[in-house]
Length: 140
Image 1 (cartoon, rainbow, N blue to C red):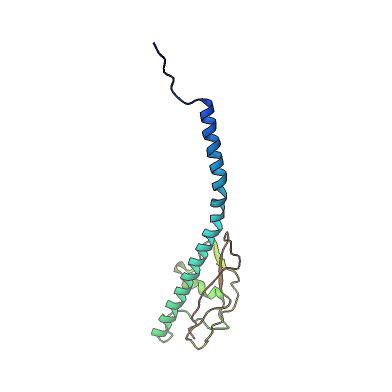
Image 2 (image 1 turned 180 degrees about the vertical axis):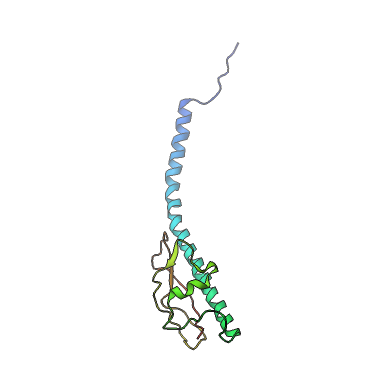
């Protein structure tokens, strides 16, 4: 009567483990670098949301003759003044202004808008420490 051997030999198991180790060692740096890129993507998303919120705020102030919305003026408003425009009144936990006290400077302070020179948003684990710009439309 023949006996049938089932299972893998020790050498086959060792070879498979070595191959998996080599694959893991080559793939790991790619996953580690993605954390910084994901943080940057998150910060860019928040910068876009703040820019959109500032645009909606400008439209609301314009439609109501200044009765509704938040006044954002060039030279007196800081980046922290944009935070209440976000849903919930706060930025996400790991995203913050690079300098919340930076003064908003619009190209046309008369109210037709412009790009903020001081408001930059960065992620705590992002690869870009300088942050991403927030476009602000001045209301007054």
